[in-house]
Image (cartoon, rainbow, N blue to C red; front, side, top):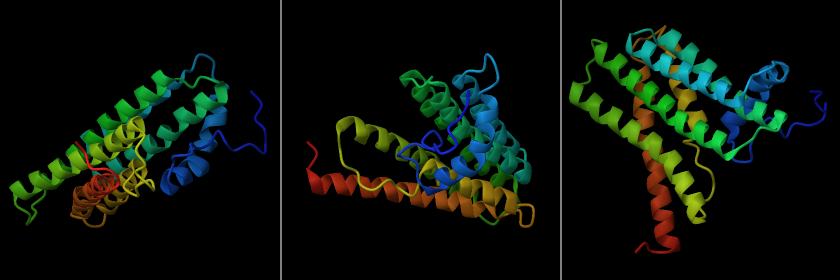
Length: 218
């Protein structure tokens, strides 16, 4: 397939925020055109490979290898952009593909958050285990609710205004950067866990309050 040199609409979706947009335009878009030439390759294969890499990153994180976990998560983040670009370029976009991508993203998110929590639990850290458990639970619930509330709001026709900064691209990037930073300070991933426990839940709370102002729920 020959690409139009001036066309860039295949690189991103309208809902992509600045972090995902940068990753897709500057990293994923360098890989996708080459994969278009691979015979037999399907978008779902790329989706599955990206999610499997993210789950592996979570396992590696739990084992205590922060830098390697961050590198694997970064690869998964790039692949997460490639599958959609590949589908658009080859005309294989489908509702089933979008469903696969959304569902497997939740497994990827969950694996990284759990891996992060176990990594911190294994450290000789001053934070008590119960507090780590609470933060990890809040991080896991909040991360899932950001995506769920976006999808549910869209299906109900609610105007949630503007897209949240606590999107998957931002959340994953924070974990990746802190995982890489663990090479210099083992406790740095704690900053990622606190961020994930606070920001996504505040974003969801903001959406609940916004819909309460616009029209009280029954």
